[in-house]
Image (cartoon, rainbow, N blue to C red; front, side, top):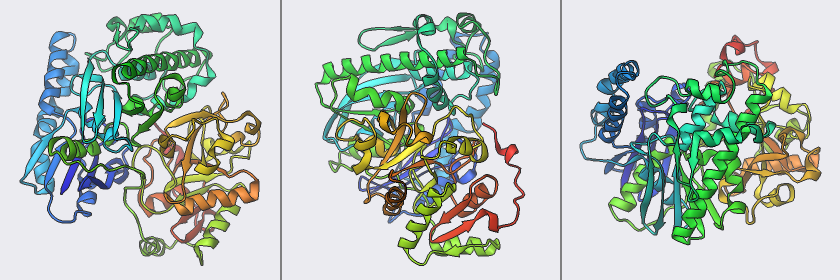
Length: 579
């Protein structure tokens, strides 16, 4: 049985193909269009997934109920009329032209005449986490900005069914609280919340903590309400209100403006309050379900700083988070909800890989290199590739690593990655300024083989599965802070990725080989892109990214391309350095 899941039109459009309950492939539209967080109808991602179709397509599932969402949006604008008129008049054309015609677009792009299921947004979040988890039963928490009406839900799942027990509805939203403060701090909403998370360790939460408690009323069971006088997102095209600016003692920070200690303290307090709400919800959820296992979905489940503290601060013993916990992952959730919950199939699929995207053979790569007159050399064996790559990294070269199937989700996990030496104290600055074109305060992630993780990191034991997807921040053991300075954040933590050899043998072996040379089997792993662009997808994307940055070598398949051997690039990297 083949089921296609689709999410689109709000942010991070994506498509997934499920066959007999197993994920065949999945990809975000942005990787094909090169438009970050592309929310357009995912024509390219649909074509990619349908190219892997074996047999007939049985069902298509969409990750929301559009009419229910339209009802909520109309309701919020009518409640705030006439103040909401301008925002409403801007929003209406996109609904009339595209969103209300979603079924028509789906059928035209797929030539599908069968049944289309419309799945509620938070049901898709819950399904994407529970039905891909290794647990037969688990408590479920989903937290994001907003779906149709729900912003937060909890429930439980057993075998091939789950039940949502309670919800919190718009406009009260932990995700929108975080996004509003992201906007107040001068960053881009639905794009830069992770920057605020990375900024928070530089601040002290105490100066603004009491002020945050004026924004949000938090109950002992984790339920909450926002004080809407501080927010404008429900009827204006911006999020913080003038009252919020008064509360925090200053205007919205200008984009690219100076980051002061005040901004850092506000980010620290935001992170502190977010964690408190999540931990209270989880304590209540455990009391309600008495289950040892926890699965989480929704954009807030990408808060890796909070995630790394969950098992130590709540009664749960095990945790699972889907690698694309945000809206993109709902394409998988919608399809699996159909397969398990609607159709009643009992087979369970444990997602143990994020490598679900396009793959390019050595023949494909060579064809691109030759047709573009790129100078390159060829590795004679896989062992030669591993050893030379590790040596180049050890000698402080920055490596573009393009191998196998592209990752699913927002993190590069060793298929479309930039790799470099964590032992070099200057490497963070080199990567931030010469390659990534991003803010100096932002940390880089360490990747470590799972069998070495407990030596270097103060992880939960056993190491939780979400570390495979770079979804947990843990303290780095103090004795290694100066050994791996380029991945040690200001608070001594690291957002680690763990890797097993059966997941990605070449990646694993490069890390181990680097360990033989350096004494430390850890690498810097950051996404293969520059700020403002999606992670690279095709060989041309990887080559262009190298030639427009300070990447020294590109390793694609069995080919080694040295930037210095090729003509000076024609790319204006400064022009690409935008959010």
